[in-house]
Length: 114
Image 1 (cartoon, rainbow, N blue to C red):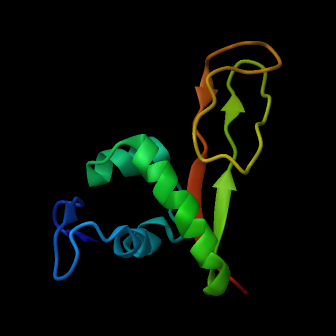
Image 2: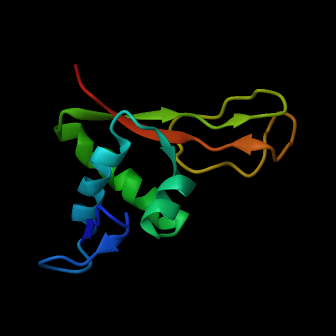
């Protein structure tokens, strides 16, 4: 599978149609110096946010052996400014400090190692 350049959706290419690893590698040019939320990526490629979150976690593990490193801008509460952990790629349901549900999504990007 790969991302179709015109539509941005997964397309079956030569080989196994369920080759998630190739899809994860195809995310690298999309996220390189261009942070996006999980919802934005899911909408662009036509997948569920849960599937994208899983794919990103696997991609981050495989990036340890490449020239790229993940950058996660953490989710923040738009009410009180509480900043969540930068290890989670999904949006929390509510703020532990003020209990607000007005949360900005974390944004995920990639940078080249120096």
